[in-house]
Length: 78
Image (cartoon, rainbow, N blue to C red; front, side, top):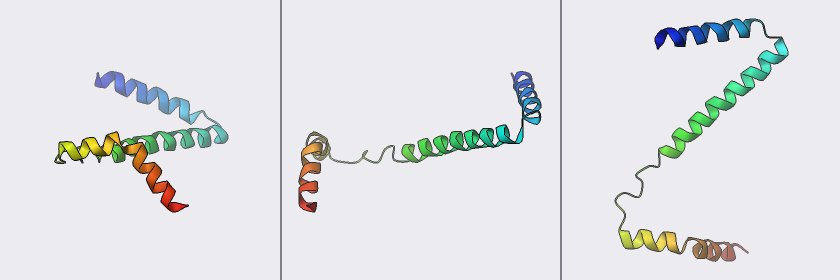
C-alpha cells in the first residue's frame, strides 16, 4: 500500500510542476479549503461527550423545549 501511495504522490507532484501560476493559486486555495474543513470537523468533535454527565431529565428538557426557549430568548432582545 505504501508503494501505491508513493506513486500517487509522485504523479501529483509531476502534475503540480506543470501547472501555470494561475492554476497553482487555484490549487493552493483548494488545499486551504480542504484543510479548513478538516480543522472545523476537529473543532466540532471537541464537543463530543460534553453532555455525558448531565442529568437525563435536564437534557430532555433542554432538547424538547429548544425551539420554545430560543423564541423566549429572542423575544427578550426586541
